[in-house]
Length: 394
Ligand code: AMP
Ligand code: MG
Image (cartoon, rainbow, N blue to C red):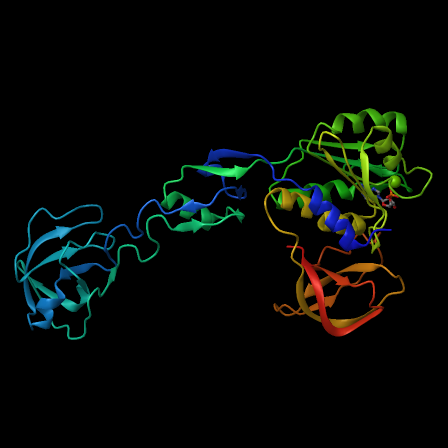
């Protein structure tokens, strides 16, 4: 059986970058940028007044001059119409360009105005007081955004600043999501005493949505090969097929056999992790990636995060999932020789974690309060008050 690391290595070597597309800036938040972006000019593009006040020459202040004739007002986006001789100043507004030769802006609060004459008592000043210098944020041609980068609201603001009204992003993969099980009914249906509701469809759609990925089709299938086969065959036109349930060794676990029958090449079946051991993963000759996850809700979450999300992230140019090291505040024993993953949460707003109640992979409430998936390595039968690796869930 493959180790977690070996299975992840296979996933990594299968991942190929998605094609890219150009989309309007308004649609870019939540998408992965596919090309670096450079400053199209200096920022600020001109020496910018950072206060409402008066633009002066520091040399004249240094010479002891404190009274100046106001020759014009410079608003943001305008240039002065009147030239300024010695002993003059401009009234200037925040965001306006400070004219050539002027290198100090005195706050309006530090001045007294009478007719067209301004007097200031200011004593402490230095060149470029209250002026944001041209190019001090970034210079023409320098990089402002480096890929891979998720377009957040702040990134969108940078794109707008440098005039990127269309943005190159990775195309969204086409995804088909299939749940299975005769006993599984949809949430609006009344289950019989021995049926359960389909929580994994909600879980997987939600996990995809958190990353901005939307399955183009969602199906639920009974455990009946004749019904399953045509739907599974049809699903293979997508980039990624995610199924859940029916991958273990039970009499109704038809999924791996059907994939083989449909010509999907098996990459691995079973990984030495708990929960999630029965996971099946394969690929078609045309490049469709197939992930068949076990049906128990916590297994489904763990295998999605460890393998499916990892794969899709890699296809968007991101690196392997970053586990974070943190302090484990608790004691946990395991008997298996597997890498185990369990739900944990941050304590008191910090980064130390404590284990959450967990009754095994079928526990329907196991993940609801979890901030992280905590990893107890295969070799460590007991972990107690020590640093461990965790994978953030939010
Ligand atoms: P399976 O992997 O099909 O053997 O299912 C393992 C367990 O997960 C069984 O108890 C199933 O009833 C349950 N299960 C399977 N699919 C789902 C689903 N979509 N939602 C909630 N539970 C499920
Ligand atoms: Mg089943």
